[in-house]
Amino acid sequence: MRIAFVSTMAGYPWGGSEYLWAAAAAQALEEGHEVFISIYDWSTNHPLITKLQHQGARLLARPRFPKYPCLLSKVFKKLLQFCFITPAFSNSLYKSVFDCHPDIICISQGSSYEAIYIPDFLHLLSGNSIPYIVICQFNSDTVSLDSSTRNKVQRFFNQAAGVAFVSHDNLKLAERQLAQSLSNAVIVQNPVNLLDCSLVPCPPQSTVSFASVARLEAACKGQDVLLEALSFPTWKQRDWQCCLYGSGPDQAYLEALAQHYGIGDRIKFMGHINDVRAIWEDNHILVLPSRAEGTPLALVEAMLCGRPAVVTDVGGNTEWIKESQTGFIAEAPTTKSFSAALERAWLVQDEWKQMGVKAHEYAKANFDPLTVQKLLNMILNATKRK
View (cartoon, rainbow, N blue to C red):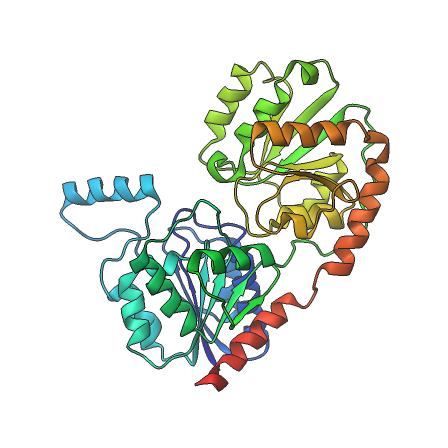
């Protein structure tokens, strides 16, 4: 079968949203299918894209910016970079996908509605009889769709052979935003970046080490909320440090914010680390003050490694964290709520190890190791709908 994977991710060259479709593409190649990959051209490919190419996938790189006269191009480029807008310039950006005559197209969205803002792609999609499935990685309670956009999304989803969400909460949120049930929707978990899912021993140091594992983008990941909560006088009298793992556009801002709050010496910026288990060899508990989510890989990975977590009630977080059993839940992504959850966690430090064991057991019982195969089967079965 000829399978085309189209990633709509435009703001960054790679992210947690990309692992699911990339793993399905790799599995498809192993099973002997032809694979085509349409992504934006970032000059340097992520190692997993390079690996897929070595396995035999054909890369269809889309230019990120149009070839307009020099001055206009520069202005337009800056505007797009600032707004993280996916450009819709001409059919040629996506025409190569359809020129490959795929039997099925898998559309991976970093959010839930990105494809709607790519009219040239939707035009090509509607003008062909090629079946497609949609992956929705992220959603937010703050998203509001006007009537015209809502109708477009409804048509886009209803005509799909299947729509995959990574959490039940985000599916329910989408149905509320669209004011309709999605009968063709399924839940497909993201894969984890772990070969060894055994417990990682807790670090021996007495200083409590919090770990925030997320892209450094406060608008979504809420690290500003975390820093404000940790700046309160009570916390300044306690023995702790907080390690921020990841990279992103807000690192300089968060460094400045930590200094502003007088906790710069306690906040460690660790950069991106590929070895998940190495993170948890040095840290006691995960803190995720996200304002919106899908189901964060970092959460499931931390639980598999045997760590409890303090999270906000967004996305799929509460599908994994059970209050005072596997972690602690802030009712809202606000400083007040997250501070209260952190306080509840701090007061029962002696229970963290046992909570980590429960988190590990819960994650082992609820994580689907065949999630990539589930998505691939969904792709392969989609042609039967036409």
